[in-house]
Length: 116
Image (tube, rainbow, N blue to C red):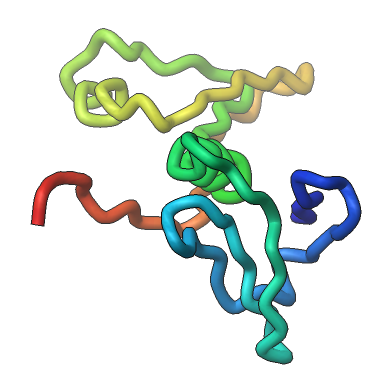
């Protein structure tokens, strides 16, 4: 994934970033593998909101793909999955009778928010 800076003058490849962070409550920064620090955006009031939105796009939610079948999301076995707002589901039919379910997860854990 690539991220284009707020001023549209820098594009970074997330594969080459060691971390992305908020600095001084208003700068969204990226530190690259060569230790270069790049300003992705300066926001006077909503840097945290922009950062959260960026995380949702850089690390997409887990997705279940149902091929030639459909889950009954009202059943008890799907209750925990159904309650996860960050889970997507895709239904696919390829014209065959073979059915399968696969889960794709980007492997990101979000630390719980709250007071320290």
